[in-house]
Length: 399
Image (tube, rainbow, N blue to C red):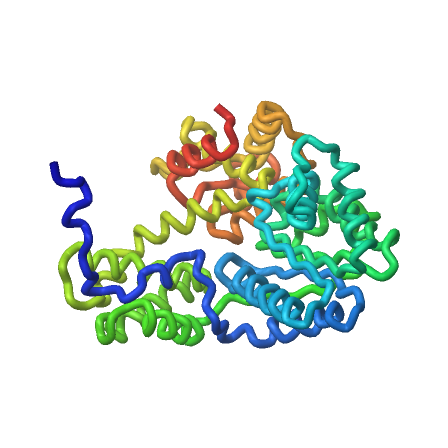
């Protein structure tokens, strides 16, 4: 009997290396981020001069190069330190997976002591072993924390890592935190913020010309020569620039356009494929963005999606659009927060979350006009409520 995969091996007419268009790929060259990279190198070079680097926080919308730059610079530092036998240890982790102080510290200590098993030990014991390693090896530890705002007990983690330096003399611990949110540090305890002494870098969105150059670099090594039309590259760059300035969106547009050309046995990737890919990519990007939001923002968004799909709120101008009052969303949010056994935030922070969700394009808001008692904020989802609700119910385990 023939194997099920017999005949599946075929040479692509479109791609040379499709993996280069996938989100996990980190390019060797990071154009238009030279300034940020140079600043990161300037800060972290203290380690190779046997001094403690400042803590560093990188901000920017998704797809602005924060993660790629962080990985690139930390990898370069790691290679250089190893080549010179310097006592520098580099750690990088995504806090979507390592989302607590215990998980982060356990990951670090397990890598410091690969021959030992720390499963089941207390957080205090693990922390003491981290300090012990640093003292015994006069080591400079640099901890890269991507999506740092996903850590549930962020105050405790940052305080522990920064205060470790009070007990270290010829060694140190430094943080490189990456976040999509400029305001995430506002939620930290004042004593934690006072211990940071940090450097901050902002990654602005890419413009259309920059995105076009980034796409051309990728196309040269990912696609077969001459397969992607110049106008298709320009269109993908223009769409991404207009909507978000997100390089991932631009790259994914060409990836999906290439897939469509492959599926339809076409010889070229044209504007038509990019236009067809736009709808597919928009949904993928939105769902990925939703899953990467901090838990509290997910709870707020879920509350809006639930009320919308339950047909609560008011109808606007006879349409099916569901318009919600800010107050009813806040009450629903508090109920859901209690259901998932997490504390709810104040109305001030709730309004801040609404602002951020609107900035991401997930919501539309307006202040109420005539016909309402007093002043209130009206909220409407920017995307399909059922899809958002289904994604978050799996992510938050609220049902």
